[in-house]
Image (tube, rainbow, N blue to C red; front, side, top):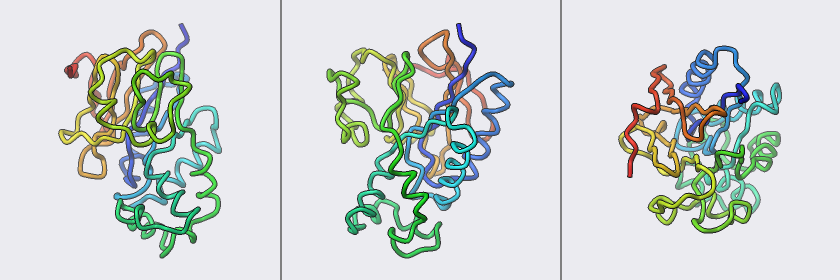
Length: 233
């Protein structure tokens, strides 16, 4: 089996210090093994340092484009819609004001062109053959290669309550977990541990020997074996 590790990182929402700490912990955890990092979206809004988060990820992708996989979240989608249409109300009431403040501007049209282009370039999903990484989830019963964009960015209840095998183990964020712990189920993993609400920023560690996670890493350096995380449902 290949030795590559995959780290999947939950919703960041402008928490740049947590991101920097978590990535350092992931590097140490990897111990020099080949690895990639998949981010499940929602880099901006709510937290105080969206610009720093975006700049960090753009720079990381520039230096190692095959190693850093950045997916689009619904908050990037709202920002893009505001930039395209000039109607920012929906984005602003969902944390866009904090993003503008982090850039030191008053309007979405004033964001750097390079950052707007990066938002446009973000993938909607990533399939590694064992896991399907996506921001919000999928429509159960619909083939993974036919998933509607809106569902991958926004879906909640219909996906979250469905216990069936989706053909891949689904790794997602989007729905904050109030207890600050990843939600591990037989068919999916939710990594949104509420970083912008005082919870940790969390990464799951995967390898090529099994489908589910091996470990969870928090931005404070805590490492919890997946075997010690109670399977919910």
